[in-house]
Length: 116
Image 1: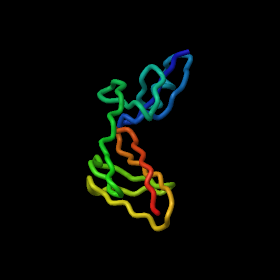
Image 2: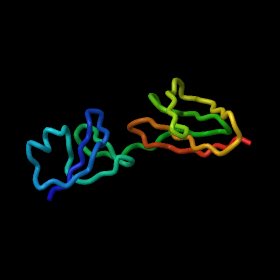
Image 3: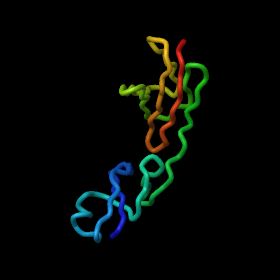
Image 4: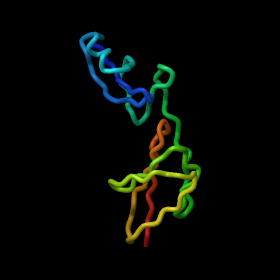
């Protein structure tokens, strides 16, 4: 068996699988690299498996800054596009919120924010 990881045209890893051999069936699925790689840690750049760079986003109180572009912010199941490298986050109700910054190829970055 041969381990492969498929990826799309942007370099995002899509699936990991074991195949008996690399055939036209595998080639027809799109691009692939030999080996098993985790999408949270790797992507493909110029045909080579590459570690995803760290996300430079930082936080001060309720403001995120150094957000790479383009990005999305995910809070719960909701995704919000980011239009500037700095973003103030406001919550309607008291509680603890997980805020995730998504910006490919950078790694996801998670912050815990609390509104009292």
